[in-house]
Image 1 (tube, protein in one colour):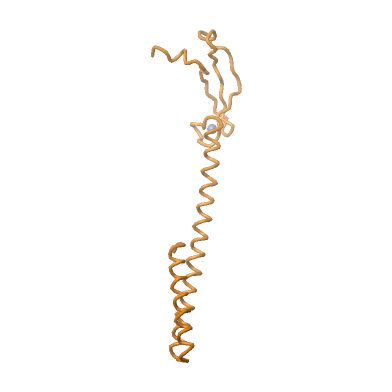
Image 2: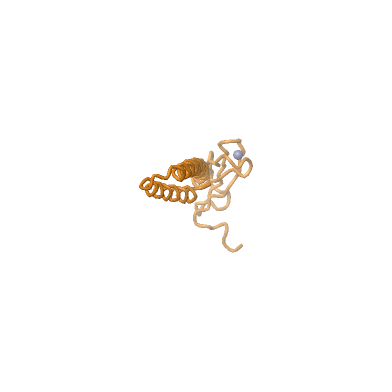
Length: 132
Ligand SMILES: [Zn+2]
């Protein structure tokens, strides 16, 4: 059950209470008992619906937290292609052997989780990509 169902049941319970008020004026004991039983069972369903909704919200919160962590991993440094959990951090850089004049560097990246290392060109002006 979800919040919408809970609200629907609550409206139903409110309707029963209204009926009970009307019965109260006529003192019909049997009808009163039947309506009370109805009210209790509807309120029990409301309780179930709301606790289900609370669980759903809790699950969503957990999911949002996981996604936020993943976004943080992906946006601050490149995600490791091997373990998919760590981030690749630059641990060394040196001028590129042919394109150093254009500011190109060869960078060594190391995963902060599994220790995997990779070499990358740091090419801010895109000089090694031109003409390909
Ligand atoms: Zn890794």
